[in-house]
Image 1 (cartoon, rainbow, N blue to C red):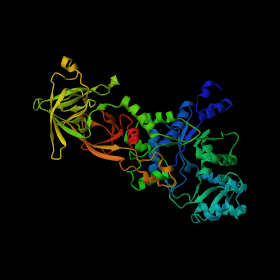
Image 2: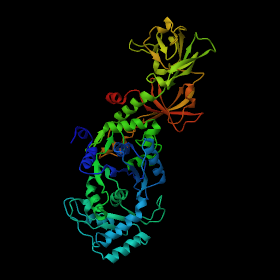
Image 3: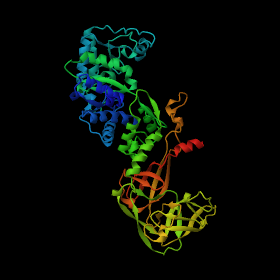
Image 4: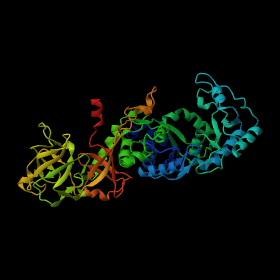
Length: 561
């Protein structure tokens, strides 16, 4: 094998070996097959990037197929959200498919299996079936209905389809091997009765195919060449192939199932069932809550498609499951936003500052770079006046030499503006500083070219002009869970690890240029972190979500604990 092939991930190596062994590149086709029973999460993003990435690499089509075989849990809302997420990540699917499109073909094939003596209607209870299935070390026993006549099986199966029976009264099982070492091969269920309304087929069907029966046959109908699944489907591969054996035409492409490891993310959960529990119990405010690991939640928080694709590329594809630190995901968004996010000024914990020697009623509009790392980003004007807001944490009455921000008798530069000196401060009845009085050096204006403007001070503070500032709701998000692996604690409910401080809502002030900011626009609030405009934001009520800090502070916080 060439050096190029050796450097590929193991999935790509499989495909390269197939091509070297005579597989035609023209028949390569991939698919992303979500079940529309919830919103996609960061784990799905890796699968999306893998399948669509292979499509791009080999110039092969990729289907978006919804495995919609359980009307009890599936909704059109989830279908719409999934399509939006895949498109937002930057991928285009060749065709949009649904397993429900194949219900008639699957039913016809099931009839064929019954006629060939390879499937039968079982009328046992689910408890009896579970008991007679045996254990991994003990063979199962045959169902008393396993040898029903052909005519009876066909009559019962048609009755199931027509809605003549109650849910749970009958199932259709494949007749394989009740002694197999693979429990999944012990006469698996192919169809169950569900009297539910399907989001696409309405009430046309009263029986619905199980995932194992639907999965491989749908791949075959679509002529998918490589069916890529997460590692938990490895035991299912034998059944996947058995079902294909029953319908495969040698003249058609036979799908090949291969598995890769799920990547778990620290301080979160990615089980749809548990994510649904978070939503249902109001632990979060919906599937797109910015604390959720859903793609919708990450988008609302301010993540970019590029950062998620880069994250997926960084963690790669592996054969073993492992826990990925969420800080790696945050590193990727921080790196991308550092390159593309405009710089603006916003004060989150305001302290009033008055420049006593600045002319009353005067205002200036100062030049400010939008992004010093991007020459094409240009500049903007920010207003300056006598009364400003700065961060409370940027002022101390007294401080040691290592404090380079504002202190009484000390000087700092206001970003894009002048050098100021703190002369005095005013306190409330509880001793809290509520106002700082300063003087400014009129000749120290940034970029003025004067000798005074070139003199150095160690601290530079961001600020906003009180007269021009826009009030904003600032939502500060943190990790949703305090434990790095909340759903792996066998003796504890994962809900016990919810971080009570995962959301803090504060009132801040931002520069007036943000009045026209659009939903999902992202900015760096200088010295404070990266923020984006939330969908709740309006022209009269600005709302910003903190995407991520300027640096990883979580590790330091945990070390102190």
